Length: 303
Image (cartoon, rainbow, N blue to C red):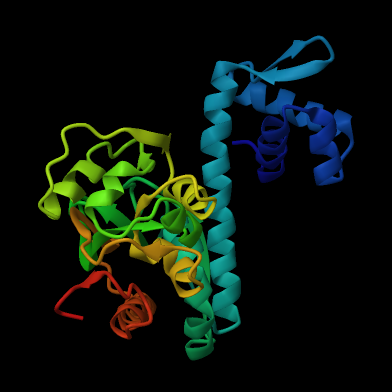
């Protein structure tokens, strides 16, 4: 088996596709990096890099190995970090979170959890799709969508509600006085959800045959920025625009939301009871139930 130093050198060289940058990062000579790469090639029996001019480029086999090695080294790092924290009488929770939810809602509130639980350290990464929690050694994840994550325990947090919003300047410019006139103004839309505006108009009792979208985006965060810039009216989740609504950068154009079929869940490995995880879940629930969080979101009755 190759040494840990050899694997680390390969991972670094693969990440940079440069022996020179790897040697600088690891404080080794370039010849030492090259020697370790040759050693790994001899052990595995595959060519990991090929030279293109004065550069080195990963082969297809090298790219596959680099991806796996990167994950494995991260697991080793996490294992050692947990041991260090345990030695310091602290626990670490490895949390997978949706990036927008983490940025806009979870992270700004984390100081409250840390103040209440100084013995727990949070390690947070972003994930968009279900994955193997045990294999990647995550204690929990926050999931959006349906209850379709196999071999896990899923706890519902809340159901998504979308609200029609716009900047004050946009509302005044287009003289939006009621829900019907919203269809007469430029509308912003999420590419992956083409029917949201049609569903919203149906929800308020207005059937719109064709909707002309002013602009389309692939992220809610981009739509939020566009609405702030007065490029159009938008349908946005309430948690995403808490700050904008509080500061009146954006205002609601209607009190009627679009209640979607999607829900937010806390997901934990099936059969794995962790007191620290339970503390974190209860804290999230208390934040939602407090009224400070998701003021316009439908909360689970059990909270």
